[in-house]
Image (cartoon, rainbow, N blue to C red):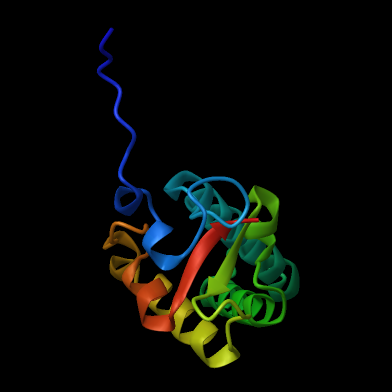
Length: 138
C-alpha cells in the first residue's frame, strides 16, 4: 500500500531551525493571529487617544498611543493587548524579554508597514529580524 503523504522536512516547518517547536505553545504564530492582534492594538490605541483627545478623530495621537503602548507592554510582558487577546507573544531569540530599545525599533518599522510585509520562511518580518525577535504562540 502506498500513500501520497510525506512528512514535511523539519527545515520546512517555520521556527524549527530557530530551535522552536513545530506546533503548540512556543511555535511560530500564524500570520492571521498576528494581523488580528495588530488590528486589536490599533483599535484600542484609537479609542484611548479619542478618549484623551476629547474628539472622535484623534489623528496622530492614536499613533503615539500605539507606539507607547506597544513598546512599554512588549518590553515589560512580551505581549501587547492585541497579542494577549489572540494568544501570541514576542520572544527574543536569546529566549528572554525584548529590550525597550529593540521594541521601539520593531514598532517604528512596523508602522512603516513594508518591513512587516517582507517575511522569511520562519514568518519573521524585517521588523522582527531587525530587533532579533520571533512571534510565537503563547
